[in-house]
Structure formats: structure tokens, C-alpha cells
Length: 333
Image 1 (spheres, rainbow, N blue to C red):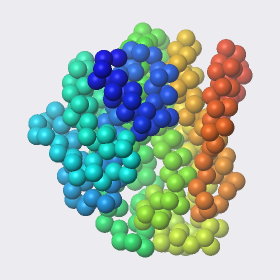
Image 2: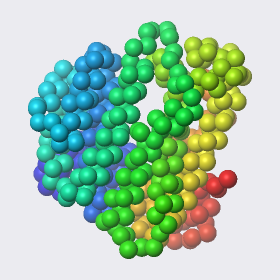
Image 3: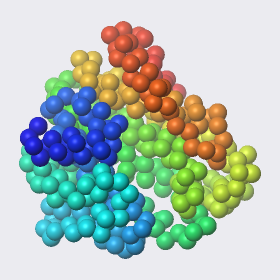
Image 4: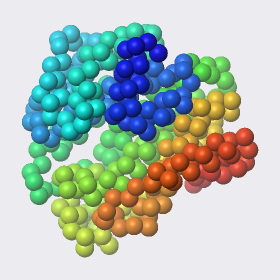
């Protein structure tokens, strides 16, 4: 890595997301820079969107300006001083303060890689802006829900499903361009993979999101159970919520199973790529197990660090044994 790369994709990335930093280190060097930079810029836009102390219109303005700079259609300075000063951790402050450096690195990518990074970030920032417009004006004590399953599916695509497509195209171009694959099936499963990971996060974070006035579970499905979004602030809503919640647990499991199919379709010699795909799937499956056995409106569930370490070690140990490795993951139903 060059010194700017090392500062942004090494030290800074480690400070704002240790888990992704470890994933990035495991990736082959030929795709590490593009994927790491895309992640870092997406993390910066997400930090802007998730700064409630800053007025909504200012956040929307900052996101739009950042998006223009990423896409190369704007040239004005970002001026994120107020946003950086409002961050709760030194890492997040540094992330916004160094946004100009990240944009400079972006322009050092090859044109084909630059186009892919810009496309995925355009989709992600669009999803973040839509999220702010939906939930940014919710008053304390109120809860706003998405209207339908189609809206939730669209949201999971914008902020995560598109990442699966990007990851696949970057890895395909640099690591196995000539390997025979069903391209359409691979891309379809990669999108489901990303959607599944996002659904796991949404279902895990439901209690926290409700306290912040957000409900990603569709209002029409809640209504079918006699629930309004605000009812979910009460623990006694759990029995009526559970059928809706369990349906989305099943849908998340199906997406993760498609992600496992995707992982096993990749060339077997691409050990690092397959492992970095397997880890979030296996952690997601474990998270779903916890969510099924705990109240949806109770304390948030989280896989322990000990379990994560065990999952990673077991996947590495079993990788040479094709049958045992494949049995680690979920079945596509």
C-alpha cells in the first residue's frame, strides 16, 4: 500500500469497522483497494445520514454534495466541519475529515473499477437519502413504518443487495475472468446474499430502531395482525407481531441460503474470496437462530465474539473437505 492507502484503508478503516478491516485483509490484493475504498466512502455517507444532532436538511445537503463528488459531477469542497465535530468517536470524525483524501484515491482507480465503485455508491447514497426522507421528520414517541414488502425489498437492494453485485463484478474482472459460470445466476444470488445480510441487521435491530421512530417491517403486514407501528413500542405486541417477524426471518434465511449457493459457485481455488463470503453468511445464520428463540421486542441479540472466532476457525479447518465445508452452510429451500 502507498502511504495514503495505508492511512485510509489500514488505520482509519480499522478504527471505524474492525470486522470489515479483518475481512479486507483476507481478500486478495488485486481487489482489496477497490472494495476497501468503496466501503470507506459508503461508511462516510452512512455516518452523515446517522448524525441526528445535525438538522435533517443539512444532512440531505451534505449527502447530495458528497454523491456529486463521488460521481464526478461536482467540484466544490465538501466542508464537513460541523458534521465531523458532531461525531461521537474519533474514528468517525477522522472519516469525515479525510473524505477529500478518499475522493482523491478514488480517481486513481482504473476506469472500469471507477465506474463500478461509482455505480454502487450512487445506489447506496440514494437509499440513504430515501431513508432520511422517510424517517427524518418522525417526532419523538412516534413510529414510522415502511408501507409494503416491496418497499422493504427495494431498501435492502439499495443499501446491500447492490453491494453483492459490485463485489461479484470486481472479483470476476480481477480474479477469475475466464472461469465458466452462470453469470445471470451468480449475480442474482449475489444480490440476494446482500439483501439477506441487511434483513438480518434489520430484524436484529428492530427494538433499537423502534425507539428511534423507525420500523422497517411493512405497515400493511402489521395492519393484517391488528397492529399499528406505534404499538410495537409495547412488549405486549409481541404475540401479534411474531407471525410477521417470523415471515421475514424465513425470507432472510432464504436469501442467506442463496448466498451460500453463490459462495460455492465461485472457483474453489479462490479460497480467500470464498471464506470472506462464508463468514458473514454463517454469522448471519447464527444470528437468525438467536432471533428465533428470543422475543422480537426484547433486548437485541448479538453473536458473541467467541462464537464468531469459532465460526471462522471451523470454516478454515473444514475448507479442504468439500462435503464437510458445504454442510456448514444453510440449505436452499
